[in-house]
Image 1 (cartoon, one colour):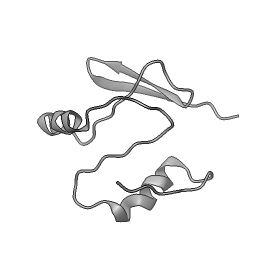
Image 2 (cartoon, rainbow, N blue to C red; image 1 turned 30 degrees about the vertical axis):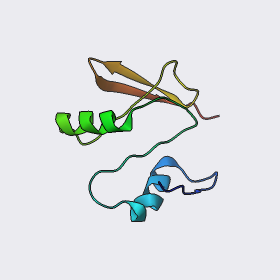
Image 3 (cartoon, one colour; image 1 turned 45 degrees about the vertical axis):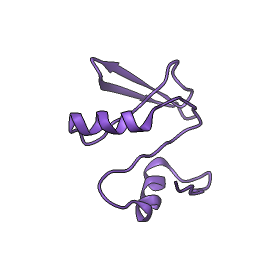
Image 4 (cartoon, one colour; image 1 turned 180 degrees about the vertical axis):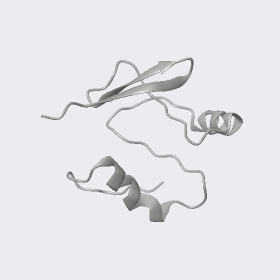
Length: 85
């Protein structure tokens, strides 16, 4: 596990780009946000591999203050990001 401090002003894409040097191979896991969930990472990785998708996302209910995923039949069909002021 690698913990990388990005600072408060770096946006999501920049944060992911900054950890690229720590990623070895084609498969990696990333957590983002302040949420806590009980996710079995071994089962999640197996699910991802069986379905052959580019990425797999986990989410929790109720929606967090940072955004909301709208899911239908197991697929994300809309992401509503946080409203900036």
